[in-house]
Amino acid sequence: MAKYRRILLKLGGEALAGPAGYGINPDRAEEVAAKVVTVRDYEVEVAIVLGAGNIWRGRDGLEHGMDHATADHMGMLATVMNALALADALSRLGVETRVQTAIEMRAIAEPYIRLRAIRHLEKGRVLILGAGTGNPYFTTDTAAALRAMEIDADLLIKATKVDGVYSEDPHQNPDATRFECLTYLEALNLRVGVMDATAISLCMDNDLPIIILDLWQPDSLERAVRGEKVGTIIAR
Image 1 (cartoon, rainbow, N blue to C red):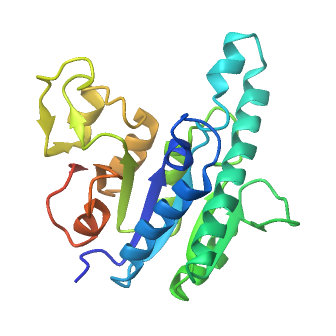
Image 2: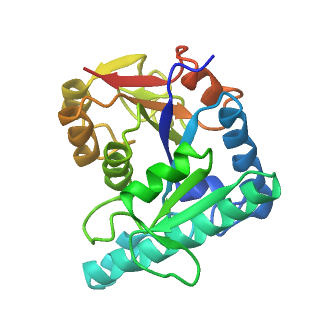
């Protein structure tokens, strides 16, 4: 039985990348889609925000003198490519899906309209939200937190390649401490690298719990929606 009625799942673009770490791998997209299906089997309403690191990283452009707004807009467009790929994979598994975008592109997706988004969720559709907030200078983490508030989600899940928040980078220091739970202020003071401070602050102001977990750990998403201990929970 699920503890949460409606969740916002934040995925990095790398979740759709193949072994090379970039681009969109259809097999990997199907793996991610299958994980989403297992969550829906608990009758949980699922909205998804994707990053774009598998296609474009704005900081690469900035290092070459690119205009910041231009680099961010390119990243927003890349998130839409990821959204369409995941929507297609879900559709092939028989899941009714809708893609909405913060930047209008009506030929391929609906514009983001809050009440319509909520209606899709109420009808049992998986909702994929592309193009971030539609504004430069905001990360897709912040977009995920914002959309979670707008659709009245009960939980924000940040699914990554690590199984929680650590005191240090566990890849550089194998003795780093993993935290099972943190308050919002503790996470902010730790300068948690896995999620930006703006997103955490927004969740803190609206009392929305965050779970950081490893997407590829077996059953991690299902355990999270059942309310079991998994990853790191950031809450009041």
